[in-house]
Length: 185
Image 1 (cartoon, helix red, strand yellow):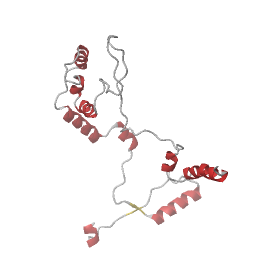
Image 2 (cartoon, one colour; image 1 turned 180 degrees about the horizontal axis):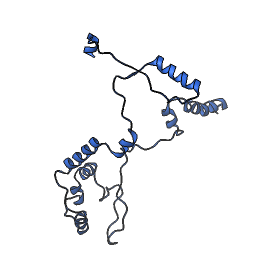
Image 3 (cartoon, one colour; image 1 turned 30 degrees about the horizontal axis):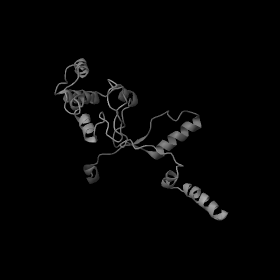
Image 4 (cartoon, one colour; image 1 turned 180 degrees about the vertical axis):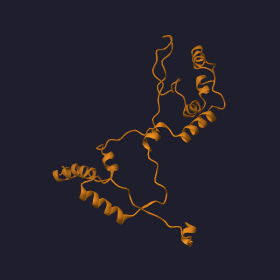
């Protein structure tokens, strides 16, 4: 007979390990939620009624005739026309042909260039959102605020009970004395 102490220890150890910071232990015992890997999920063809009831039932373990191999699925993703034809190269059905005709004429060869040109033109002009978000022009590069004079201005505004936005922000003016430093930068 197994002592009670051993049973309690065997029941408590997994719970203590599940409380550890590693998620692997929690997932192993089923205490942490785990979601499926979206790259490993595959779809199966839906069940459908047979066209007539004289068909033989499928053999257990046999592959489903509607299911495409992974290579065939990749080909169908890259070349949609291949997906419209049957798995053995059969011609398109009347419904598939009607769908293609309803979709309209094929896309012109230069459509990607046209879309890229339109996007570049919008980027040059700046869209509405850019105009709303960036309505102020950025400060000139190299403009520095004089910290002592700015602190003095803010103290004076506070003493007078005025808004900190009142008055001009003092900036440091660079003098052009043609020093080596000014020439380099």
